[in-house]
Length: 239
Ligand code: UDP
Image (cartoon, rainbow, N blue to C red):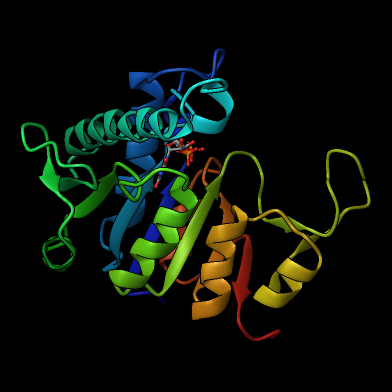
């Protein structure tokens, strides 16, 4: 059982299913309801880092631009997502606070670690927008950094229709097998795709647990927060 967890959501989870772009209020509400169901009565404190890939990824969309500027645009996209997720969570009946790494006091609180921890203690879901507030990073790194500084025991890497880490690409190899548990070192050595390399390095160095799981399988997050084994667990020890 976990006491405090950090959930990483990709921006695409809020997007319109057909275009993969922008914010779909319906998709966002479905996700918020799943989050509410999971967190209610679980006693687990939940912080969320939301990505921005449904709007903009600096490296992909900003080709030819100044790369820092392109990354700042990406970070602003994550703030839009944070606001949309807060709106849906609160309509679903889940008390929420948004904090942003880039100050935007008209729309949200600035990210203040101890304040975020206080919100979590009070049972509020804390949604963190704006990434790390600095370019050349991804929100995967934000997830691992915030998990560490907020004292979360695990970073939950939510995936869409991917139920864990496989020993080979399951779309190409029908014999690929899902791994239930694996060490950080083995993930690195075998080049398995879990999160970006910088984020993974941080987890390895600090021994932060990671769970990779399918958030679109109904009830999965709920089971996870209640202590069931779901998806793939990555820890510093092999077993
Ligand atoms: N970004 C950044 N610094 C950060 C976090 C994000 O520069 O600390 C930018 C980067 O351009 C990234 C974009 O914001 O491509 C959107 O974040 P990400 O790609 O991680 O979103 P996701 O794929 O998780 O939806």
